[in-house]
Length: 326
Image (cartoon, rainbow, N blue to C red; front, side):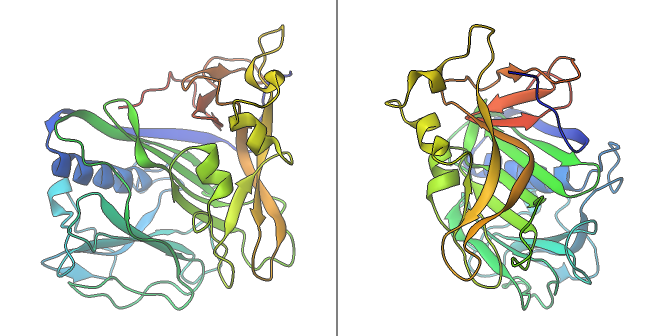
């Protein structure tokens, strides 16, 4: 198999917390670091190239929709059914505007593992209060009061790897604690390639456990707005089954004699609503066998180490550094 090649350029922002934290504090830290990582540009500067920006936020004591980030530390993430924290972020390089792509994270449950996630691709969020997140007329709810992180007791380290494309069209985050991926470790906010003309949006948003079963078999994870909420990730016909099923052909579960593994480009499918069928392709994202260990590196067509890395069956473009899962 020839080395992989990519259509976009990427940069990595990694944020790590070292030292013991309680379960609740670790969860707040992971949520906060995910937010922080999105605010950094691909030039390594907060607010720089392709960075997300703050539309508004709430820390349970005050709120605004004028661009001020009130979540300046993990302690500002207050989880409650009453007054609680939320934040709306915008990616100006993606979406239809004037709202562009906006994502809302809402900590509206007293359960420290929960976070509600929604997004808007055009209208943008308005309103909001100390006890309620803003809303958008075209909003799509990805998760509503759902466990996103775990509630382990003492945590020695936690953090996030956030990889963004320099054109702002792709943002992917991997959340981890003590070297293990989180309940819903994979956060994706991106614009598909080769989108069918009948689909009214190029945008998918996911907050999902990083497994083939979650990515290809469950609904309400990848979302198309305007009708269906059952977008599903798939690749190369039935290979999503064969890559993860231990009874599949052995060729799927071992490299060839040259040491190369079979990998398959990922696409977006929809099975309900008006826009059925394949909607488009993910940029620079491939599926591999579960047999490939997390942290296995793949060769790039142009050479160089650590250019692509496998994480639980998905192969990501990487930045040339060894993978670190905090």
